[in-house]
Structures are given as structure tokens and as C-alpha cells.
Image 1 (tube, chains in turn green, yellow):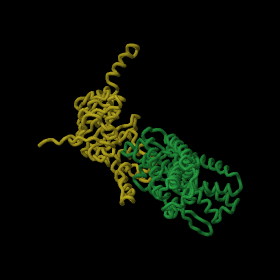
Image 2: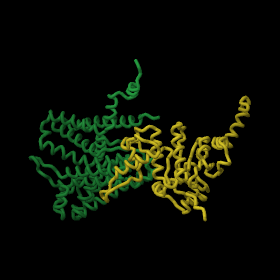
Image 3: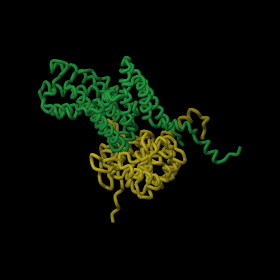
Image 4: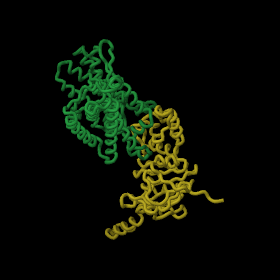
Length: 350
Length: 267
């Protein structure tokens, strides 16, 4: 058979099937979309109640809070760090707000601002410890989360005489705070919360910040190639500090969004919530090794998580099964993430 | 008419890491339009010299003069703003980011006002294409990830970036791993072009014949001190090979081996 130039060229090219696989694997955000389609089909058939307006409101209620946390953690993951203290911080800042209003008899707004300042300070401390010690942020934030959780669980009964503070809606300034963090809207017979709006705004904002600004470009560089970033004069320390402070602000928002609708707050352990955020962000396509992140993917991941959880609940199964399902999804996401990285590494070199 | 001051001058420059002096009272002038090759063993202070010139490591004592004015760079950003750009040994690329994001990394063009200030991606893509064309690379999509580039193209990217941002001086730290002829040619073209444009070029290389080919001056470092400051007239390629291979130590090693194994003879 004569060998033509065309034949040689086509022989050198990878087979088309492999290239399609490459393309799929180059998009880690495909995992949550496929996963979401699967769980919606699965539970939509089993429990039709999930696909009604009421079912949707229930799903979105869970998804909004998860999504806010996942966006913050996803941004941090893109920068090569992780924050396990955000769930605890949410509870602690809500408890602080509640204690200041209920026990200290502060106005709602001064209390909210004070707890925001405390949250920002803690985020800054997290970042400072990570930058200063060079220890993995996983360990540093685990430590601060434990300190915070212990202090909150033990501190609130000391200050308030009970593990719960309620009746916060009688404080001055409550109306505006309730409108901003606790209002609801009725659409199609179901009640949707304002936290949805916060989630949407934060997802779009964080996506813009990560992919369309100088700060975002530097976050991606720090997460993917810290040494290169330093060599090119990217302010690694400042950017890391900013990231941790932003995450803490998201933690405060989460706490406020759970406090305001019920006008009360209880000191509960919440270390596991932070793990949920990490899981959702990773399923959504944020590389755990840093350097790449998708905020839209994190949002889809949050939807996936909440559909699975509500679906399992509505099916009448033990709700703990949803954790097992999530674990499987996380494994898939990690394997795909790893495949993406190794595939990109294995690009031909001359 | 007085002669203009050299682009860069080091006077009694000392850098300490803890109590160890990585550079000790180093003095050298780096003129525009000249290629200075820095030679020395591992641990002789070559990398420290590169990181001082690039602003990564601030110096502890002595002076670093840029156009005759003492400066102290607090970050590589400051050095680059002053027109000193570096091609790092590891090329300093973020593999998961696109070519244009890598090219402008640390000096990203923006548009709009705060808080809506955003990356000017179009300008950055244009800059990338032009900068790559300058080093003879065409056909690279600025949006493709650096991961998908071949090793030579990555090197071109690093060089293109340095030539784009380096208005006064170019610092080139060659990788210790041997390079292919194509890669070495790329580096050679870059330093010769920079010299032609009047930049002060600092080349850290491990290839003596190549250093002899392109270099104008040779700065020898040993244990953080200047062991020799030679011009092209002082040395030939064989001298450089000897000096770079470890100089005295290699001679000592040869003598010792010959003593132990007379069968080696005069090879």
C-alpha cells in the first residue's frame, strides 16, 4: 500500500474516540451535571413530590446554604487551600450575634457588624497562621475550628444560661435585618427564601472574581503553581490572607441566614458542615490540588447534593444513605480530577 | 562627556540566609549590550544572584545600583517594573492556566474602575500573540493551557514574557537538565537579540562551549564570592570548561584517581 502524506498525518493523530475522552476529561464540571441529571431522574421517578413547586423549594432551601459555603470553599480550593472552620464559624458568629442581642441587649445591626468583624478577624487569623507557619491549611483550620466550636458550645450556656437564645425579633433594627436575610417569596404555592438570591449573587460574583479579575488570575496561579507565582511577583501572602478573610465573611453570612428566619440561635456542633462544603466544591469541579475551580460547577454540585438528600428523605429511606451516595460522587469527582491533571501532564513533550 | 552608568551594578552585595552568607561582598558591573555569563558550581551563589537581581530575595548589605541609583527591590514585581525580567530555571509557568494568563501573570492589564476593574483579556491576548511572534513562535492559540504546549514552546513562552517586560536587563537562569539543540538555540537567539537591543544580559549557564560562543564576560562564583571576572580575551572554551567543571576540585580528583589507578595513565 502506498504511503501518502495524508496517511502519515492521520496515523500520527490520536484516534477520535480518545480525543473525545480527552475533551470530556478536560472539563471537570461535567461530573456534577451528569450526576445531577442522574439523581433528578432517579428520584423524580421514585418520588414525584420532588418535582413539584414545594419539592423544589425544599431542595433549593438546602442548596442555597450549601452553595454559599461551597462557593467560598471553592474559591479557596482554587487558591490551593481549604478551610474546615467555615461551618463552625457560621454557628459561632450567629451565636455571637444572638448573645449580643439577646443577652447584651445590643441593637441588631451593631450586633451583626460586631460578629462580622469577629468573623473577618478569625479568617485573617486563619490566613495569617497558614502564611506564617506554612502548615497545610487543612490542619490549621481544623485547629481553629475545634477551638471555636469548643468555646462556642461551652461559652453560650455560660453567657446566656441556656444553649439557645431566642426572641431576637424584639430587638431594635430587626425589621431591616429580617428583610435582608429572612424574607420569603411565594411562587406557585411554594415558599422560597431570600438565601437563594444571596446564593445566586455570590456564585456569579465569585465566578467573575475568579476568572475575570487580576485577583482571580493570581488566585489560580497561586493554587496551581505557587513557586511560579512568587517568581513573577504575585503577592502570594496578601492574596492568601484575602481568600481566608472572604471565606470567613461567607461563614458569617451563612450564620446570619440561619439565625434570622427563626429569630433564635442554638450552639450546635458544625464541623461536618465544612466537609460538606469541600465535597460539594470538589464534585463541582474545583481541583483539590488547586489551580482550577468552577463556581457554576459548585452551584450544580450543591443542587446535586440537596436533590440527593431530599430525594432520600422523601423516599422514606434512612437519610444517612445520602451520605454514602455523596461519598461515591466525591470519589468519581476526585478520580476525574486526577485524570484531568495526569492527562494534562502527559501532554506530548519534545 | 561622561560615560553613562552601567545598567546594573553590584557593590559589596551580601545576602544572608540565617548566619550563612549565600553571597558575600559581590561586586560586578553589568553593562547594557553585553552578555555576562555566570559560572560556578552548585551552591556557589548563582541562584541567589539571580533571585537578588529579580527581586525575589532582598539583599542584606551593599548596594544594587540601577542606572547609577541605589535600589532595593521588595518583590519581583518591583524588579519587573524597573525593567528587569527573568527567565526562571523552572520557567515559572502555571500549567493549568492558558498561555495569555501566564504571559501577563503578575502584571495583568485591567480595564474599568474599581470595584468593576477586570482583566483586559483582549489586550492580554494581543500582547501574547505579539510577544510570541517576537521570538518566532506562531500558531500557538493564546487560550490553550500551557499544559498542552511542548517543552520548547513553554520555554519560548517564558522567554517571550521576559523580553516583553524586560526593558533594561534580561536575567536567564538555564535549567540544570541538558537542553536539546533546539531549546539551546532558542535561548541563544533570545540573549543575542537582547544584547542587540542594548539590554544588560545575565546568563546562568552550564554549557561552557556555549557560554564561550555567546558571552562577552564571565563572572566566576565560588562559595558566594567572586572568584574571577574575566573578559572574552582572557579565556578560551577549554579554560571555561575547566573552570565550570569544578576547577581545582576536578584537578584534585584527577590526581587522586591517577594515584590509585595508575592504569588510567594520561587519558
